[in-house]
Amino acid sequence: MKRSNKREMINKLIEIISREGGISVGVAAKTLGISEVTARRYLNELASHSSLPLKRVRGGILLDKSKKSLEYMFDLKLSMSSKEKIRIAKRAAEFVEDGDSLIIDSGTTAYYFARFLMGKRGLKVISADVKVAEELAKNPDIETYIIGGIVRPGYFSVGGDMAVKMIEKFHVDKVFLTADAVDLEGGITNFSSFEAHLKESMISQGKKIFLMADHTKIGKVGFMKVAPLESVNVFITSKGIDEDVASRIKRRGIELIVV
Image (cartoon, rainbow, N blue to C red; front, side):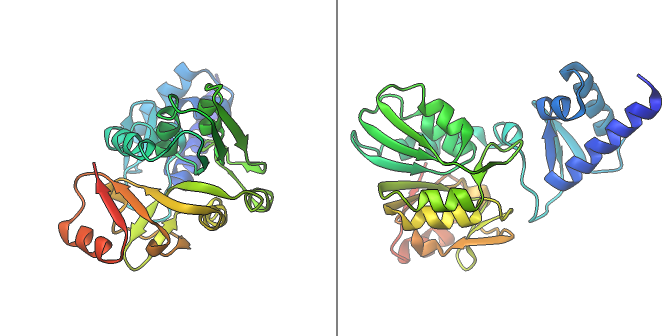
């Protein structure tokens, strides 16, 4: 490969990482039209020599910088706080009863949650995430609906005006929501506007709202407002939440579960 082509590809990677907060080996390979072996080598070079504050993680690279606007792609999120997300998802699945109708939000915690529904029967589930729908479709006892709309590359979430209009046609027993950031005053927020309006509509369509978010997201405020924290009936989070914050959440009438 010519040096100029290689430099162009590395510059493209820097552009994506700066904008998105990271990139996985798989996405880098597909975006640049190269093998995963070559993509991995380029990411290693970037981690070693770039002036950006980068760190290599399993399956990709992250921009190691605290920015409210950064949201990591799906493959990278899977390697972040995975134990906490799995515990949260497993506990949330205990609230699902056979025959329930559900809306499941997008993201890695939602993905783990979908996997814990495998033993449930007679569910009707509306999903806003390609990966979540794929997991649900493995269970013949779950009637799976996926929202139509724009699929966000690298994130696998579905959004846009079409998705909002479609979600408004459903009324369900329970909504299982995720969030990029959760704050007592700022409420539930997202780093991107892509899913924010859809999340807001999801809340309106459910009888009972569950929020699944690990403790690292508490106290942060994202770019786009979704809803007040009081919109949630049950908040399932991980150990590490500040005790004072936990008490204040409970005083607002929200059932807080720490796992």
